[in-house]
Length: 624
Image (cartoon, rainbow, N blue to C red; front, side, top):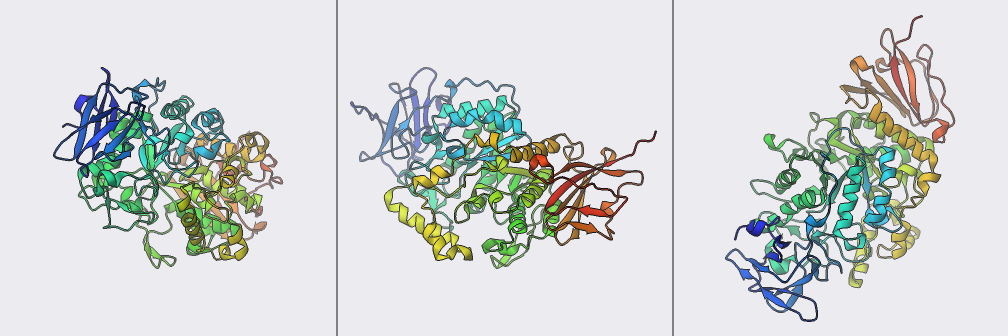
Protein backbone atom coordinates (compact mmCIF):
# COMPACT_ATOMS: atom_id res chain seq x y z
CA UNK A 1 0.00 0.00 0.00
CA UNK A 2 1.45 3.40 -0.95
CA UNK A 3 2.38 5.82 1.83
CA UNK A 4 0.34 8.41 -0.05
CA UNK A 5 -2.86 6.37 -0.26
CA UNK A 6 -5.92 8.63 -0.04
CA UNK A 7 -3.73 11.73 0.08
CA UNK A 8 -1.88 10.86 3.29
CA UNK A 9 0.49 13.46 4.75
CA UNK A 10 2.40 11.02 6.96
CA UNK A 11 3.43 7.40 6.49
CA UNK A 12 1.48 6.37 9.60
CA UNK A 13 -1.21 7.65 11.92
CA UNK A 14 -4.90 8.51 11.62
CA UNK A 15 -5.68 11.14 9.00
CA UNK A 16 -8.94 12.91 8.31
CA UNK A 17 -10.19 12.49 4.73
CA UNK A 18 -11.81 15.35 2.87
CA UNK A 19 -14.79 13.25 1.90
CA UNK A 20 -15.41 12.17 5.49
CA UNK A 21 -14.02 9.44 7.69
CA UNK A 22 -10.38 8.72 8.43
CA UNK A 23 -7.59 6.63 6.99
CA UNK A 24 -5.57 4.62 9.51
CA UNK A 25 -2.08 3.22 9.05
CA UNK A 26 0.31 1.80 11.62
CA UNK A 27 3.53 -0.19 11.32
CA UNK A 28 3.21 -3.12 13.72
CA UNK A 29 5.06 -6.16 12.35
CA UNK A 30 5.13 -7.67 15.86
CA UNK A 31 1.33 -7.93 15.82
CA UNK A 32 -0.80 -10.41 13.92
CA UNK A 33 -3.89 -8.23 14.26
CA UNK A 34 -4.43 -4.54 14.99
CA UNK A 35 -7.88 -3.11 15.64
CA UNK A 36 -9.03 0.47 16.07
CA UNK A 37 -11.17 0.70 19.22
CA UNK A 38 -13.66 3.41 20.13
CA UNK A 39 -13.21 4.04 23.90
CA UNK A 40 -16.85 5.15 24.16
CA UNK A 41 -19.63 3.09 25.74
CA UNK A 42 -20.35 1.02 22.64
CA UNK A 43 -16.62 0.05 22.20
CA UNK A 44 -16.85 -0.28 18.42
CA UNK A 45 -13.91 -2.09 16.79
CA UNK A 46 -12.52 -2.03 13.27
CA UNK A 47 -9.91 -4.56 12.17
CA UNK A 48 -7.15 -3.19 9.92
CA UNK A 49 -5.72 -5.05 6.91
CA UNK A 50 -2.15 -6.32 7.35
CA UNK A 51 0.37 -6.38 4.50
CA UNK A 52 3.62 -8.29 4.07
CA UNK A 53 5.74 -5.43 5.44
CA UNK A 54 3.88 -5.32 8.75
CA UNK A 55 1.69 -2.29 7.99
CA UNK A 56 -1.91 -2.41 9.18
CA UNK A 57 -4.25 -0.02 7.40
CA UNK A 58 -7.87 0.74 6.67
CA UNK A 59 -10.55 3.38 6.09
CA UNK A 60 -13.07 4.06 8.86
CA UNK A 61 -16.09 6.12 7.90
CA UNK A 62 -17.42 6.42 11.48
CA UNK A 63 -14.48 8.42 12.89
CA UNK A 64 -13.87 12.16 12.49
CA UNK A 65 -11.79 14.97 14.02
CA UNK A 66 -12.19 15.04 17.79
CA UNK A 67 -12.91 11.32 18.11
CA UNK A 68 -10.77 9.31 20.48
CA UNK A 69 -9.41 5.85 19.71
CA UNK A 70 -7.11 3.05 20.82
CA UNK A 71 -5.13 0.48 18.92
CA UNK A 72 -5.87 -3.03 20.19
CA UNK A 73 -2.79 -5.22 19.66
CA UNK A 74 -3.63 -8.88 19.07
CA UNK A 75 -6.89 -8.38 20.92
CA UNK A 76 -5.44 -8.08 24.41
CA UNK A 77 -3.65 -4.72 24.76
CA UNK A 78 -5.03 -1.21 24.26
CA UNK A 79 -2.29 1.19 23.22
CA UNK A 80 -2.14 4.79 21.93
CA UNK A 81 -1.20 5.45 18.33
CA UNK A 82 2.62 5.75 17.89
CA UNK A 83 1.88 8.64 15.48
CA UNK A 84 -0.90 10.18 17.57
CA UNK A 85 -1.36 13.87 16.87
CA UNK A 86 -2.80 14.46 20.37
CA UNK A 87 -2.95 12.61 23.70
CA UNK A 88 -5.52 14.61 25.72
CA UNK A 89 -5.21 12.27 28.73
CA UNK A 90 -1.44 11.81 28.53
CA UNK A 91 0.75 9.07 27.04
CA UNK A 92 -1.18 6.22 28.69
CA UNK A 93 -4.60 7.38 27.45
CA UNK A 94 -6.39 7.09 24.12
CA UNK A 95 -5.36 9.12 21.09
CA UNK A 96 -7.47 11.82 19.46
CA UNK A 97 -8.12 12.38 15.77
CA UNK A 98 -6.82 15.81 14.71
CA UNK A 99 -7.48 17.66 11.47
CA UNK A 100 -4.35 19.80 10.89
CA UNK A 101 -6.09 21.74 8.12
CA UNK A 102 -8.83 23.10 10.39
CA UNK A 103 -6.62 25.88 11.78
CA UNK A 104 -6.87 29.23 9.96
CA UNK A 105 -3.29 30.40 9.47
CA UNK A 106 -2.57 34.07 8.82
CA UNK A 107 1.17 33.80 8.02
CA UNK A 108 1.00 33.26 4.26
CA UNK A 109 3.53 36.05 3.66
CA UNK A 110 6.04 34.70 6.20
CA UNK A 111 9.22 33.62 4.38
CA UNK A 112 11.09 31.99 7.26
CA UNK A 113 14.40 32.75 8.96
CA UNK A 114 17.99 32.75 7.75
CA UNK A 115 21.08 31.43 9.57
CA UNK A 116 22.61 34.91 9.97
CA UNK A 117 21.69 37.91 12.06
CA UNK A 118 19.62 36.02 14.63
CA UNK A 119 19.22 36.41 18.40
CA UNK A 120 17.78 33.24 19.94
CA UNK A 121 15.64 32.86 23.05
CA UNK A 122 15.32 29.47 24.72
CA UNK A 123 11.84 28.95 26.18
CA UNK A 124 10.33 26.28 28.41
CA UNK A 125 6.60 26.73 27.95
CA UNK A 126 5.64 25.21 31.30
CA UNK A 127 7.63 27.78 33.30
CA UNK A 128 7.64 30.74 30.92
CA UNK A 129 4.41 32.02 32.51
CA UNK A 130 2.58 31.20 35.76
CA UNK A 131 -0.12 29.40 33.72
CA UNK A 132 2.41 27.39 31.73
CA UNK A 133 0.35 27.19 28.52
CA UNK A 134 0.80 28.22 24.90
CA UNK A 135 -2.05 30.69 25.22
CA UNK A 136 -0.42 32.39 28.19
CA UNK A 137 2.97 32.40 26.45
CA UNK A 138 1.37 33.94 23.38
CA UNK A 139 0.36 36.98 25.43
CA UNK A 140 4.05 37.61 26.24
CA UNK A 141 5.24 37.51 22.63
CA UNK A 142 5.00 41.30 22.08
CA UNK A 143 7.48 41.81 24.93
CA UNK A 144 9.97 39.45 23.27
CA UNK A 145 9.55 41.14 19.90
CA UNK A 146 9.99 44.56 21.51
CA UNK A 147 13.24 43.38 23.07
CA UNK A 148 14.60 42.67 19.60
CA UNK A 149 14.75 38.89 19.74
CA UNK A 150 14.35 37.13 16.41
CA UNK A 151 13.90 33.38 17.06
CA UNK A 152 12.28 31.49 19.94
CA UNK A 153 13.87 28.09 20.57
CA UNK A 154 11.09 26.12 22.25
CA UNK A 155 12.16 23.26 24.50
CA UNK A 156 10.64 19.86 23.57
CA UNK A 157 6.86 19.54 23.54
CA UNK A 158 6.34 15.88 22.56
CA UNK A 159 3.91 14.23 24.98
CA UNK A 160 5.53 13.16 28.27
CA UNK A 161 4.20 11.42 31.37
CA UNK A 162 3.45 13.32 34.55
CA UNK A 163 2.34 16.83 35.38
CA UNK A 164 5.60 18.60 34.54
CA UNK A 165 9.02 18.06 33.05
CA UNK A 166 11.67 19.53 30.79
CA UNK A 167 10.30 17.65 27.78
CA UNK A 168 13.30 15.41 27.07
CA UNK A 169 11.41 12.26 28.13
CA UNK A 170 8.90 12.46 25.30
CA UNK A 171 7.25 9.23 24.16
CA UNK A 172 4.61 10.38 21.65
CA UNK A 173 6.70 12.31 19.17
CA UNK A 174 3.80 13.67 17.11
CA UNK A 175 1.53 14.73 20.00
CA UNK A 176 2.04 18.24 21.45
CA UNK A 177 2.10 18.12 25.25
CA UNK A 178 -1.47 18.28 26.51
CA UNK A 179 -0.49 20.14 29.70
CA UNK A 180 0.31 23.16 27.52
CA UNK A 181 -2.96 23.09 25.56
CA UNK A 182 -4.24 21.56 22.34
CA UNK A 183 -2.49 21.34 18.97
CA UNK A 184 -4.28 24.45 17.71
CA UNK A 185 -3.03 26.40 20.73
CA UNK A 186 0.51 25.62 19.60
CA UNK A 187 -0.37 26.62 16.04
CA UNK A 188 -1.84 29.86 17.39
CA UNK A 189 1.40 30.58 19.25
CA UNK A 190 3.52 30.12 16.11
CA UNK A 191 1.07 32.12 13.98
CA UNK A 192 1.12 35.02 16.47
CA UNK A 193 4.91 34.92 16.64
CA UNK A 194 5.16 35.21 12.87
CA UNK A 195 2.79 38.19 12.90
CA UNK A 196 5.28 39.93 15.22
CA UNK A 197 8.31 39.02 13.09
CA UNK A 198 9.48 36.25 15.41
CA UNK A 199 10.59 32.85 14.16
CA UNK A 200 10.02 29.73 16.26
CA UNK A 201 12.16 26.59 16.16
CA UNK A 202 11.48 23.40 18.11
CA UNK A 203 13.86 21.34 20.23
CA UNK A 204 13.37 17.69 19.19
CA UNK A 205 14.73 14.54 20.82
CA UNK A 206 15.65 11.74 18.42
CA UNK A 207 18.31 10.04 20.54
CA UNK A 208 16.04 8.20 23.00
CA UNK A 209 12.49 7.98 24.34
CA UNK A 210 11.38 8.42 27.92
CA UNK A 211 11.15 5.58 30.47
CA UNK A 212 7.38 5.76 31.00
CA UNK A 213 4.72 5.50 28.31
CA UNK A 214 7.01 4.24 25.54
CA UNK A 215 5.03 1.46 23.80
CA UNK A 216 6.96 1.35 20.51
CA UNK A 217 8.60 -2.03 21.16
CA UNK A 218 5.17 -3.65 21.37
CA UNK A 219 4.54 -2.59 17.77
CA UNK A 220 8.04 -3.66 16.71
CA UNK A 221 11.19 -4.47 18.71
CA UNK A 222 13.16 -3.19 15.71
CA UNK A 223 12.62 0.40 16.83
CA UNK A 224 15.52 -0.12 19.26
CA UNK A 225 18.99 -1.65 19.16
CA UNK A 226 21.57 -2.84 21.67
CA UNK A 227 24.39 -2.24 19.19
CA UNK A 228 25.08 1.19 20.68
CA UNK A 229 25.21 2.57 24.20
CA UNK A 230 23.00 5.52 25.00
CA UNK A 231 23.24 7.94 27.92
CA UNK A 232 19.49 7.86 28.60
CA UNK A 233 18.12 4.45 27.61
CA UNK A 234 18.04 2.06 24.66
CA UNK A 235 19.41 3.48 21.42
CA UNK A 236 17.09 4.10 18.49
CA UNK A 237 17.64 1.65 15.62
CA UNK A 238 18.29 3.88 12.63
CA UNK A 239 20.05 1.05 10.78
CA UNK A 240 17.09 -1.35 10.88
CA UNK A 241 13.86 -1.44 8.87
CA UNK A 242 13.11 1.70 6.91
CA UNK A 243 9.74 2.02 8.67
CA UNK A 244 11.41 2.35 12.08
CA UNK A 245 13.77 5.04 10.82
CA UNK A 246 10.93 6.81 9.01
CA UNK A 247 9.02 7.43 12.24
CA UNK A 248 11.71 9.93 13.24
CA UNK A 249 12.58 11.35 9.82
CA UNK A 250 8.93 12.05 9.05
CA UNK A 251 8.54 13.69 12.45
CA UNK A 252 11.07 16.34 11.47
CA UNK A 253 8.99 17.31 8.46
CA UNK A 254 5.73 17.08 10.44
CA UNK A 255 6.57 19.95 12.80
CA UNK A 256 7.62 22.16 9.89
CA UNK A 257 4.59 21.29 7.76
CA UNK A 258 1.67 21.11 10.18
CA UNK A 259 2.84 23.65 12.80
CA UNK A 260 4.86 26.06 10.60
CA UNK A 261 7.93 25.84 12.84
CA UNK A 262 10.91 27.66 11.37
CA UNK A 263 13.40 24.93 12.10
CA UNK A 264 14.63 22.47 14.68
CA UNK A 265 17.15 22.13 17.46
CA UNK A 266 18.44 18.53 17.51
CA UNK A 267 19.15 17.34 21.05
CA UNK A 268 22.37 15.44 21.90
CA UNK A 269 23.22 14.43 18.35
CA UNK A 270 26.22 12.44 19.61
CA UNK A 271 23.73 9.81 20.78
CA UNK A 272 22.00 9.59 17.38
CA UNK A 273 24.12 6.63 16.22
CA UNK A 274 23.83 5.51 12.61
CA UNK A 275 26.19 3.70 10.24
CA UNK A 276 23.75 3.73 7.31
CA UNK A 277 24.95 5.00 3.91
CA UNK A 278 22.98 8.18 4.62
CA UNK A 279 23.22 9.25 8.23
CA UNK A 280 19.79 9.85 9.71
CA UNK A 281 20.71 13.40 10.80
CA UNK A 282 21.33 14.27 7.17
CA UNK A 283 17.99 12.66 6.25
CA UNK A 284 16.23 14.63 9.00
CA UNK A 285 17.69 17.92 7.76
CA UNK A 286 16.70 17.12 4.19
CA UNK A 287 13.13 16.18 5.13
CA UNK A 288 12.69 19.31 7.26
CA UNK A 289 13.81 21.57 4.42
CA UNK A 290 11.59 19.75 1.94
CA UNK A 291 8.61 20.27 4.25
CA UNK A 292 9.37 24.00 4.43
CA UNK A 293 8.99 24.43 0.68
CA UNK A 294 9.85 28.02 -0.22
CA UNK A 295 10.32 29.03 3.42
CA UNK A 296 13.86 29.20 4.81
CA UNK A 297 14.38 27.24 8.01
CA UNK A 298 17.13 27.09 10.62
CA UNK A 299 18.49 23.81 12.02
CA UNK A 300 20.69 23.83 15.12
CA UNK A 301 22.40 20.86 16.74
CA UNK A 302 23.72 20.05 20.18
CA UNK A 303 26.88 17.96 19.90
CA UNK A 304 29.14 17.53 22.91
CA UNK A 305 32.09 16.09 20.88
CA UNK A 306 31.98 19.18 18.63
CA UNK A 307 31.97 17.31 15.33
CA UNK A 308 32.08 19.75 12.44
CA UNK A 309 30.68 17.19 9.96
CA UNK A 310 27.24 18.26 11.16
CA UNK A 311 27.89 21.78 9.87
CA UNK A 312 29.43 20.94 6.52
CA UNK A 313 27.20 21.25 3.44
CA UNK A 314 25.63 18.03 2.27
CA UNK A 315 27.36 18.51 -1.09
CA UNK A 316 30.67 18.18 0.77
CA UNK A 317 29.66 15.07 2.68
CA UNK A 318 28.30 16.84 5.75
CA UNK A 319 24.88 16.75 7.37
CA UNK A 320 23.90 20.30 6.43
CA UNK A 321 22.99 21.83 9.79
CA UNK A 322 23.18 25.61 10.15
CA UNK A 323 24.71 25.90 13.63
CA UNK A 324 25.86 24.06 16.74
CA UNK A 325 25.60 25.06 20.38
CA UNK A 326 29.00 26.20 21.67
CA UNK A 327 29.51 24.92 25.21
CA UNK A 328 33.15 26.06 25.09
CA UNK A 329 32.07 29.70 25.14
CA UNK A 330 29.75 29.12 28.08
CA UNK A 331 32.30 27.15 30.08
CA UNK A 332 35.19 29.60 29.73
CA UNK A 333 32.88 32.57 30.36
CA UNK A 334 31.47 30.97 33.50
CA UNK A 335 34.95 30.24 34.85
CA UNK A 336 35.98 33.81 34.03
CA UNK A 337 33.03 35.18 35.99
CA UNK A 338 32.92 32.79 38.95
CA UNK A 339 36.44 31.37 39.27
CA UNK A 340 34.97 27.86 39.70
CA UNK A 341 36.60 25.03 37.73
CA UNK A 342 34.93 21.87 38.95
CA UNK A 343 33.94 18.84 36.83
CA UNK A 344 33.80 19.59 33.10
CA UNK A 345 34.93 23.16 33.75
CA UNK A 346 38.43 21.81 34.53
CA UNK A 347 39.29 22.09 30.86
CA UNK A 348 38.97 25.89 30.96
CA UNK A 349 41.00 28.61 32.66
CA UNK A 350 38.49 31.39 32.21
CA UNK A 351 41.22 33.44 30.60
CA UNK A 352 40.58 36.37 28.34
CA UNK A 353 42.58 34.56 25.66
CA UNK A 354 39.95 31.81 25.69
CA UNK A 355 37.24 34.42 25.19
CA UNK A 356 39.18 35.93 22.29
CA UNK A 357 39.70 32.51 20.70
CA UNK A 358 36.00 31.68 20.99
CA UNK A 359 35.17 34.96 19.30
CA UNK A 360 37.59 34.30 16.45
CA UNK A 361 37.35 30.56 15.95
CA UNK A 362 34.15 29.23 17.54
CA UNK A 363 35.04 26.09 19.45
CA UNK A 364 38.11 26.06 21.69
CA UNK A 365 38.53 22.30 21.41
CA UNK A 366 39.09 21.39 17.78
CA UNK A 367 41.06 18.18 18.26
CA UNK A 368 43.22 18.84 21.32
CA UNK A 369 43.47 16.54 24.34
CA UNK A 370 40.65 17.16 26.82
CA UNK A 371 41.76 16.05 30.27
CA UNK A 372 38.24 15.73 31.73
CA UNK A 373 37.42 13.01 29.19
CA UNK A 374 41.01 11.76 28.85
CA UNK A 375 40.82 11.93 25.06
CA UNK A 376 40.97 14.33 22.16
CA UNK A 377 37.86 16.43 21.64
CA UNK A 378 36.49 18.37 18.72
CA UNK A 379 37.26 18.73 15.03
CA UNK A 380 38.54 21.71 13.03
CA UNK A 381 36.06 24.54 12.46
CA UNK A 382 38.44 27.29 11.40
CA UNK A 383 36.79 27.57 7.99
CA UNK A 384 33.24 28.04 9.34
CA UNK A 385 31.33 31.31 9.63
CA UNK A 386 30.92 32.79 13.10
CA UNK A 387 27.14 32.42 12.77
CA UNK A 388 27.66 28.64 12.78
CA UNK A 389 28.13 28.79 16.56
CA UNK A 390 25.37 29.51 19.07
CA UNK A 391 26.81 31.11 22.21
CA UNK A 392 25.15 31.64 25.59
CA UNK A 393 25.81 32.49 29.21
CA UNK A 394 22.76 30.51 30.35
CA UNK A 395 20.72 27.63 29.01
CA UNK A 396 18.38 25.13 30.63
CA UNK A 397 21.15 22.59 31.27
CA UNK A 398 23.79 24.91 32.62
CA UNK A 399 21.54 26.85 34.99
CA UNK A 400 20.12 23.62 36.38
CA UNK A 401 23.51 21.86 36.54
CA UNK A 402 23.96 23.26 40.02
CA UNK A 403 22.57 22.48 43.43
CA UNK A 404 19.68 24.92 43.36
CA UNK A 405 19.30 26.17 39.76
CA UNK A 406 20.67 29.60 40.68
CA UNK A 407 20.73 32.20 37.91
CA UNK A 408 24.08 33.63 36.81
CA UNK A 409 23.31 37.20 37.88
CA UNK A 410 22.92 35.90 41.45
CA UNK A 411 26.36 34.26 41.34
CA UNK A 412 28.59 37.03 39.97
CA UNK A 413 29.13 40.73 40.39
CA UNK A 414 26.81 43.02 38.41
CA UNK A 415 29.77 44.54 36.56
CA UNK A 416 31.13 41.23 35.32
CA UNK A 417 27.66 40.08 34.35
CA UNK A 418 27.10 43.22 32.26
CA UNK A 419 30.53 42.99 30.65
CA UNK A 420 30.17 39.36 29.53
CA UNK A 421 26.61 40.07 28.37
CA UNK A 422 28.16 42.65 26.05
CA UNK A 423 30.58 40.07 24.68
CA UNK A 424 27.67 37.65 24.13
CA UNK A 425 25.41 40.11 22.33
CA UNK A 426 28.01 42.11 20.41
CA UNK A 427 30.29 39.20 19.52
CA UNK A 428 30.33 37.61 16.06
CA UNK A 429 28.59 34.31 16.94
CA UNK A 430 24.82 33.79 17.13
CA UNK A 431 23.78 34.68 20.69
CA UNK A 432 21.09 32.94 22.71
CA UNK A 433 19.36 34.07 25.90
CA UNK A 434 17.61 31.72 28.29
CA UNK A 435 14.12 32.73 29.39
CA UNK A 436 14.21 35.31 32.18
CA UNK A 437 17.85 36.16 31.59
CA UNK A 438 16.81 39.37 29.85
CA UNK A 439 15.23 40.77 33.02
CA UNK A 440 17.42 39.02 35.60
CA UNK A 441 14.60 36.80 36.81
CA UNK A 442 14.45 36.25 40.54
CA UNK A 443 13.28 32.66 40.04
CA UNK A 444 15.74 29.78 39.68
CA UNK A 445 15.52 27.16 36.96
CA UNK A 446 15.76 23.68 38.41
CA UNK A 447 15.65 20.14 37.17
CA UNK A 448 12.10 18.83 37.51
CA UNK A 449 10.53 15.61 36.26
CA UNK A 450 7.24 14.02 37.26
CA UNK A 451 6.99 10.28 36.65
CA UNK A 452 5.18 7.32 38.16
CA UNK A 453 6.01 6.60 41.80
CA UNK A 454 8.45 3.75 41.17
CA UNK A 455 10.69 6.06 39.12
CA UNK A 456 10.94 8.81 41.75
CA UNK A 457 13.78 7.28 43.76
CA UNK A 458 15.86 6.20 40.73
CA UNK A 459 15.56 9.69 39.24
CA UNK A 460 16.53 11.31 42.55
CA UNK A 461 19.51 8.96 42.83
CA UNK A 462 20.50 9.68 39.25
CA UNK A 463 20.35 13.41 39.89
CA UNK A 464 22.59 13.07 42.96
CA UNK A 465 25.04 10.92 41.00
CA UNK A 466 25.19 13.45 38.16
CA UNK A 467 25.84 16.38 40.49
CA UNK A 468 28.53 14.43 42.35
CA UNK A 469 30.99 15.28 39.57
CA UNK A 470 31.08 18.73 41.21
CA UNK A 471 33.16 18.29 44.36
CA UNK A 472 31.39 21.10 46.22
CA UNK A 473 28.02 19.43 45.61
CA UNK A 474 29.15 16.38 47.57
CA UNK A 475 28.91 18.54 50.69
CA UNK A 476 26.49 16.63 52.99
CA UNK A 477 24.55 19.82 53.69
CA UNK A 478 24.07 20.40 49.97
CA UNK A 479 23.03 16.78 49.42
CA UNK A 480 20.43 17.07 52.19
CA UNK A 481 18.95 20.20 50.63
CA UNK A 482 18.91 19.13 47.00
CA UNK A 483 15.43 19.78 45.56
CA UNK A 484 13.63 16.59 44.58
CA UNK A 485 12.93 16.55 40.82
CA UNK A 486 9.42 15.20 41.43
CA UNK A 487 8.45 17.86 43.99
CA UNK A 488 5.77 20.17 42.49
CA UNK A 489 7.10 23.05 44.60
CA UNK A 490 10.40 22.68 42.79
CA UNK A 491 8.58 23.11 39.47
CA UNK A 492 6.47 26.06 40.65
CA UNK A 493 9.52 27.95 41.91
CA UNK A 494 11.06 27.74 38.44
CA UNK A 495 8.22 29.73 36.86
CA UNK A 496 8.91 33.24 35.64
CA UNK A 497 7.05 36.28 36.90
CA UNK A 498 6.32 38.36 33.75
CA UNK A 499 5.78 41.46 35.93
CA UNK A 500 9.54 41.54 36.54
CA UNK A 501 9.99 42.82 33.00
CA UNK A 502 8.51 46.09 34.23
CA UNK A 503 10.26 46.18 37.61
CA UNK A 504 13.74 44.99 36.59
CA UNK A 505 14.28 47.97 34.32
CA UNK A 506 18.09 48.05 34.39
CA UNK A 507 18.50 44.48 33.15
CA UNK A 508 15.86 45.00 30.48
CA UNK A 509 17.54 48.18 29.28
CA UNK A 510 20.92 46.43 29.11
CA UNK A 511 19.66 43.63 26.90
CA UNK A 512 17.42 45.84 24.77
CA UNK A 513 20.21 48.32 24.02
CA UNK A 514 22.77 45.65 23.20
CA UNK A 515 20.39 43.81 20.87
CA UNK A 516 19.53 47.11 19.18
CA UNK A 517 23.24 47.81 18.66
CA UNK A 518 23.69 44.36 17.21
CA UNK A 519 20.82 44.99 14.81
CA UNK A 520 21.51 48.60 13.77
CA UNK A 521 25.24 49.26 14.02
CA UNK A 522 26.58 49.15 10.44
CA UNK A 523 29.69 47.19 11.40
CA UNK A 524 28.20 44.71 13.86
CA UNK A 525 24.98 44.11 11.93
CA UNK A 526 26.66 44.00 8.54
CA UNK A 527 28.65 40.87 9.30
CA UNK A 528 32.20 41.29 10.45
CA UNK A 529 34.66 41.15 7.59
CA UNK A 530 37.55 40.44 9.91
CA UNK A 531 37.93 40.18 13.66
CA UNK A 532 41.06 40.16 15.75
CA UNK A 533 41.74 40.31 19.45
CA UNK A 534 44.48 40.78 21.99
CA UNK A 535 45.12 40.32 25.69
CA UNK A 536 45.66 43.72 27.32
CA UNK A 537 46.18 42.40 30.85
CA UNK A 538 45.46 39.12 32.66
CA UNK A 539 41.80 40.11 32.98
CA UNK A 540 41.38 42.47 30.02
CA UNK A 541 40.89 41.97 26.30
CA UNK A 542 40.20 43.94 23.18
CA UNK A 543 38.31 42.73 20.11
CA UNK A 544 38.59 44.77 16.94
CA UNK A 545 35.87 44.41 14.34
CA UNK A 546 37.11 45.66 10.97
CA UNK A 547 34.34 47.31 8.98
CA UNK A 548 36.22 48.81 6.03
CA UNK A 549 34.49 51.94 4.78
CA UNK A 550 31.97 51.60 7.64
CA UNK A 551 34.75 52.12 10.16
CA UNK A 552 36.01 49.82 12.89
CA UNK A 553 34.71 48.90 16.33
CA UNK A 554 36.63 48.15 19.50
CA UNK A 555 35.05 46.09 22.24
CA UNK A 556 37.16 46.35 25.36
CA UNK A 557 36.36 44.17 28.36
CA UNK A 558 38.12 44.39 31.70
CA UNK A 559 37.10 41.73 34.21
CA UNK A 560 39.72 42.84 36.74
CA UNK A 561 40.45 46.05 38.64
CA UNK A 562 40.73 49.50 37.11
CA UNK A 563 43.59 49.40 34.64
CA UNK A 564 45.88 52.07 33.24
CA UNK A 565 47.58 50.78 30.10
CA UNK A 566 51.03 52.29 30.43
CA UNK A 567 52.58 51.45 28.06
CA UNK A 568 50.00 50.31 25.52
CA UNK A 569 51.97 48.80 22.61
CA UNK A 570 48.97 46.98 21.16
CA UNK A 571 48.32 47.81 17.49
CA UNK A 572 44.62 46.90 17.74
CA UNK A 573 44.10 49.93 19.99
CA UNK A 574 45.39 52.34 17.38
CA UNK A 575 42.81 54.28 15.38
CA UNK A 576 43.36 54.97 11.70
CA UNK A 577 45.81 57.70 10.78
CA UNK A 578 43.11 60.37 10.65
CA UNK A 579 40.64 58.75 13.07
CA UNK A 580 39.69 58.96 16.70
CA UNK A 581 37.79 56.60 18.98
CA UNK A 582 34.36 57.56 20.23
CA UNK A 583 32.41 55.75 22.96
CA UNK A 584 29.28 54.15 21.49
CA UNK A 585 28.21 52.18 24.53
CA UNK A 586 29.34 51.45 28.07
CA UNK A 587 28.27 48.81 30.56
CA UNK A 588 28.81 51.36 33.32
CA UNK A 589 25.92 53.54 32.20
CA UNK A 590 23.66 54.38 35.13
CA UNK A 591 20.83 53.18 32.88
CA UNK A 592 22.05 49.63 33.57
CA UNK A 593 22.94 50.11 37.22
CA UNK A 594 26.52 51.17 36.50
CA UNK A 595 28.49 53.89 38.22
CA UNK A 596 29.24 56.12 35.24
CA UNK A 597 31.67 55.93 32.34
CA UNK A 598 35.17 57.37 32.51
CA UNK A 599 36.29 59.22 29.36
CA UNK A 600 38.41 57.41 26.79
CA UNK A 601 41.06 59.52 25.09
CA UNK A 602 43.48 57.74 22.76
CA UNK A 603 45.81 60.77 22.89
CA UNK A 604 46.47 59.99 26.55
CA UNK A 605 47.05 56.78 28.46
CA UNK A 606 44.20 54.30 28.25
CA UNK A 607 42.18 53.98 31.43
CA UNK A 608 39.97 50.88 31.59
CA UNK A 609 37.35 50.70 34.29
CA UNK A 610 37.23 47.52 36.33
CA UNK A 611 34.56 44.91 35.68
CA UNK A 612 33.26 46.82 32.71
CA UNK A 613 32.91 46.76 28.94
CA UNK A 614 33.03 49.64 26.48
CA UNK A 615 32.33 49.74 22.74
CA UNK A 616 34.22 52.31 20.68
CA UNK A 617 33.73 53.42 17.08
CA UNK A 618 36.35 54.90 14.81
CA UNK A 619 35.39 58.39 13.74
CA UNK A 620 36.99 60.96 11.50
CA UNK A 621 37.19 64.36 13.16
CA UNK A 622 35.29 67.15 11.49
CA UNK A 623 37.24 70.20 10.26
CA UNK A 624 35.75 73.66 10.38
